[in-house]
Length: 494
Image (tube, rainbow, N blue to C red; front, side, top):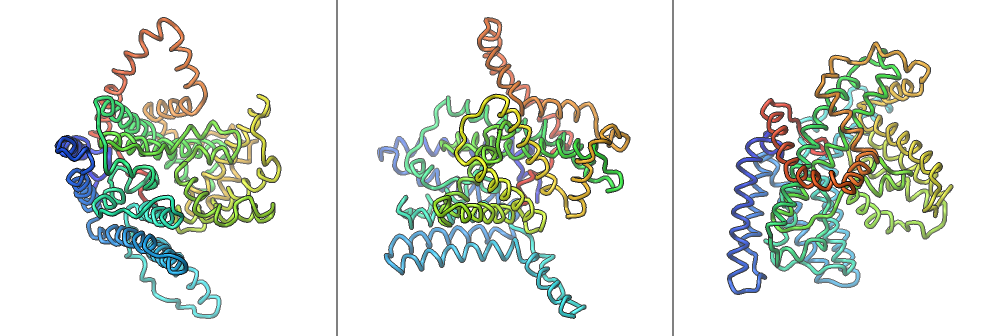
């Protein structure tokens, strides 16, 4: 993938984004004043479609047709569902959703399916096995996200929540909008429908959008990229050198990396959406402060959690069909959530791991909302432990590596064996980023901000820091990007 398609790149930050925003604002202002009461944003919507297709094509031109095909299926599938009734309506829904899922399976799970049949063939005596034809098939950028956009759109039409979009340019703008195209958040059409007919960008929107974008950029460049050095070095060690100290340090570093990487992307997407006049839903809410696994998933990748809840868990029966069925539904939904992240047994295991813990929590304490402080502390420790052990499955390439890392993490008697820690990866930049990331994931960060606003000195300096801080963060990010320290977002590969 060409590097400028990444948000933290010089060409994107100083050429593509400013030009796109500038032209978009000009077109919006012109169309709003054209005497049609702001209900004719065809030109500005079309401009965003062109910019988004250029963004996608520059990164992966040869697979642009997949995005266009998926979007066409969604648009005409919505028309077909909306214009039919009875069994024909249901058949149109199943036909569309089946087509989108088959497209996803072909590109994302073809290799896994072929591997299963290869093993079956070997077990039956076909020692040669079929020759793989999937190694050269690339995974289209963001296919997991834009297919979910399409599915949610058509299902919402079927359920009567929205009407089919009349103008193709409006739907194309929704489906291909580059800020959230390749890694979310997963935006439902009903959440942004009004903005395709009327939107106004004020100076406050520009200020808020830029602040949010810079905050996300800082998360990505100044924290996620830095701690990734430590995480990669720790997980790259030979399994024989994996001690309790290295396993915990590497897992903590990865937990910080994936959170600040993905939440940073979401912040940038939400900020850019605001610059264009859109309001995208939030995607993260300090998930490492959760005191149960259920709460963690209400705070982590919230748009994905809501998608699986509304379009899979509830249609399966949710928690309305008895305890046993509820537990099965939870495990099935999170198994599919794991497979959505990637076509590997580790991702499936990651989903099953969470599904089991969620089922156990639902069985033990289904309706607990308030807990005493000491129980919340225990719950917080328990939740962090579950999440960190789950990140091992998510990060490791093989079961062997996952089990070795788990074994080392449980070998607490050898925590003092720090000789195998990749000390060369703990540079001052990495150490500062690690410490800052940990602080930002704890209540200390929120407490310090709240207390500072209640003191005269804080009320004097906090607004000044709020104005100058983003400029300082942007300057530091530019230094890091100029030094070539940026790397792709983790969720780009999903």
